[in-house]
Amino acid sequence: MAIAILRAVSEDLEHHDEQPLGKVYDRHLLVRLLGYARPYAGSVVTAIALIIVSSLLQLIGPLATAVALDLFIRREGPVAPVSRWVRDSLLAGRTVEPAEGLVLIAAVFLLALVSTSLVLWVQGLVMQMMGQRIMADLRGELFGRLQTLPVSYFDRNPIGRLVTRVTNDVDSLNELFTAGLVSIFGDIVLLGGIVMALFWLDWRLALATFAILPLLLGLSIWFKARARQTYRRVRIRLARINAFLQEHLTGMSVVQLFGRESDTTEQFRQIDDAHRDANLQAIFYYAVYYPMVELITALGIGLILWHGGGAVIAGSLSLGVLVAFLQYAQRFYQPLADLSEKYNILQSAMASSERVFALLDTEPEIVDVPRAERPAQVRGGVEFEDVRFSYIEGEPVLRGVSFRVEAGETVAIVGHTGAGKSTLANLLLRFYDVDSGAVRVDGMDVRSWPLAALRASVGLVLQDVFLFSGTIADNIRLGEAALDDEAVESAAREVFALDFISRLEGGFEATVQERGAGLSVGQKQLVAFARALAFDPRLLILDEATSSIDTETEQLIQKALGRLLAGRTSLVIAHRLSTIQKADRILVMHKGELREQGTHAELLAARGIYYRLHQLQYSEGRVA
Image (tube, rainbow, N blue to C red; front, side, top):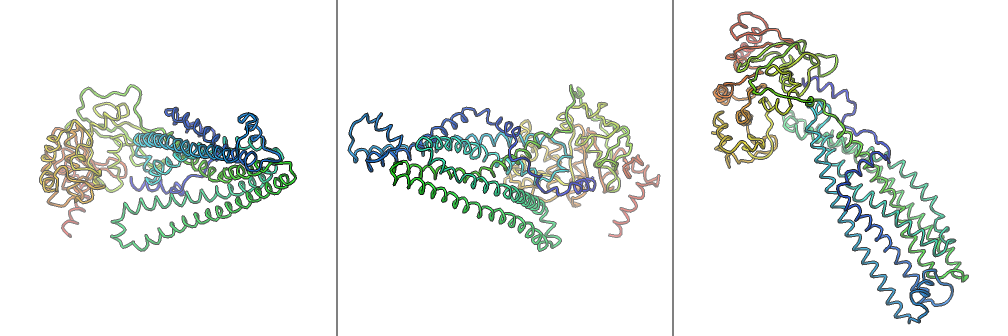
């Protein structure tokens, strides 16, 4: 099985790389993304209202400056339209002393500034809270989808890539909600307000202000084309780092055992250097872009000073209008300069959403059939009828396997590596579906069972026991509230695990580290046996469950097996023939076919494959 899976993965070229980036703007993806904000429509409406208010407030400062200059500082010559409006409407011809007028203008300016800061703070708080809730919803949906996907999906997709989907990609979408869309909408509202204000103040000077826009547009197009390429390179290099770290940190014991630290460090250095170089290239384009933006905006300010200053000298333009234009120009050019950052946010979000939705849209290959049902009483009878199966199309692993296991019978399955033994267990549990034939439990095809009911009826103990972070008790009950402390302790006692558990600090509440680090292989196996017994399945599968256990622990396990197997249908997959001699029947698999079956004595007497396996194993034992 493992060889088949590895070959399948190797055919997925550059499987650690991210997929090519899609369109920068995809309406369908964006609409779907916005759908996640629907439950928080109140927050969205509030944020939009605050954006409009903050944009209007930001228009007040330059207008107030123009009024101050025209009416209270330089009180002769032409005045700005806003100054004329204040003089004719608000003041209604009344005379206001310059000092008093400046105090009023300063108060208005300060009030607008404080109000803008307060509105922006509330807006940011609202959007961040909404973004965090959307992220939680997305991550929950992604994790829920991952739990419905079959084992074959995880064979084809590196774990590091899937972790990236639930973490980095969701973070990119959060940035879109909290900074990208809101900021772009705010910039559009602000730019629209500034454009109207500029044309209201003086349309000729407004045209001079916009004269540099073609240069900014051309620079932005140049930057976007190159930023898009470098962005993808950075993402690919980051994906390779994540995949390399996940794989080698998990396999650190093997790295150290074979003294590969230096070689592994060199491999990581090369991957890390490639990531650094990609980032440096991106930094180069940013280093060119922003100074050029500053240069072009400075050119725009220069045009305003040249054209507007000349008009002020000629007496055709008020000084207030010129100063207001200079202030508005800074506020107008800055959002345009920041469009590149918004572009990156949008591009990142579109690429991330494409990958996230691709995962969410992955339909589980193994699902409950309509009106799935289970027998009223599970007895545990198993039948394989002409089962054929391939992990890779055209390379069969099982070739027409047929056999029956009666309820309560203990059947051992032996054979060389790659004979298809573990595949039988995978098909029985519906981790995979057969290509043809049928697998039945109590006379019903496993495909007609509800998945939850089928797997709840089967206990599985593997050679490589997986323990979760938590406590010993947590790993035995696996969150099943019906298993109280007494049931957990009873199960541990039955499989002789209570002795070592009681010696741990905290006993059943002793901390279990990731993957059971700190516990011996034998201790982890005992916990797995206690887990299987606590759930009391009618059908039990032991897949090489005693092959990695020391002799002393194996003696404990052998004592516990009698209790564990009693009254249950049991399939015992084993290499060590000493552990299955008392089985009711032994099935011998060879190259995907069931070649022999019978008791230990019958198979030895037949002098076939089992006899040769027995002779080979025991001759090796005598040599050792």
